[in-house]
Image (cartoon, rainbow, N blue to C red; front, side):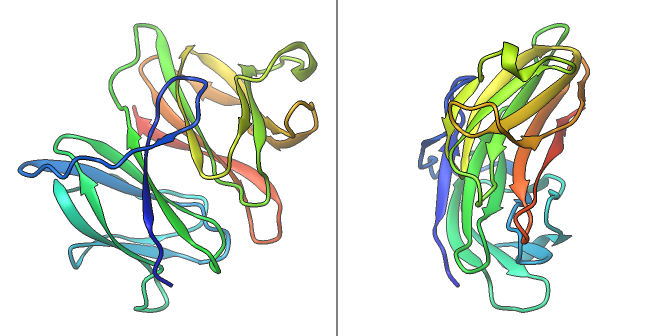
Length: 226
């Protein structure tokens, strides 16, 4: 099933992604990776301009960054078990940028969202953390980020009513161990509990909220830098 690709630029630590069409550009390279957040498509391959750049990306994981030519590229996301692509569209990648393509939603209605990554170094002593809501059975959600051991009833959400298939900006956090919760808006009922997430100074991380084909919620942390 051919689906369109959306481009998202992460802006601000507590805002969801806004739509952006990247400049066509040309000359030089960009880096691209795939996060497979679709619960029931199985493993997938990533093909750029007819060349496979990542293969066998299973649900809940991401590929490594692949270097590709910048500018307008033909992007296909193919199930590993067939040659019929789930996604087959053009994507514009600016030279020198890093992007994450999020394969989201169920196999009956797959979508690909292109997220512009900010892998620049955090400020001294800090890490950066971005949140992606990719759980199709949970929409919208409040997102809490707090030091591990914090009582959720004592803190307010960092992001309110975060929509499905959106990304936050990058939160600057002191090195330490944190916990991230997704709850129903305005409530403390926890749908996703990340468990302890350790962040070291200089790291850039992305936490993705997920649910599997049976509707069980979970999360995964992507190691963007360091």
